[in-house]
Length: 112
Image (cartoon, rainbow, N blue to C red; front, side, top):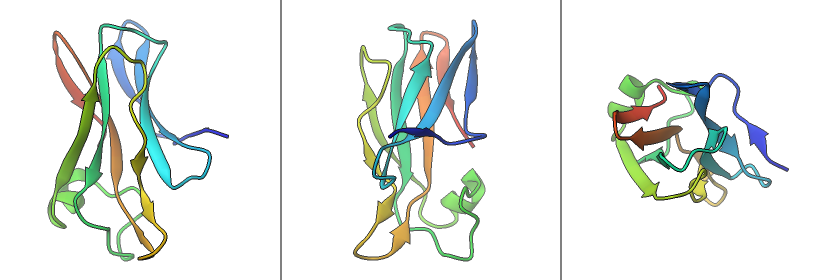
């Protein structure tokens, strides 16, 4: 089962969105263009470090930057969805911040 992360969509124009999705096990996330468009590359940025439990489930970019910053996992070309990126480390009981990103000829777009 795949679940869309509510509130994480980024409007790209022309009725297209990049969406942050959680995979079936909920330990992984991926980005998806909807509706599909081969003119974009997509990826997921993941925090370099696990996020402190004192932060909200979806920290802001400023909060992630203050805790080590983002690591770009991609981009993945000619695909409407990215590869899976781990968002929860079961062994360490730590969650990672993730955000969906997309790029086309006009620029790059990432969630909060």
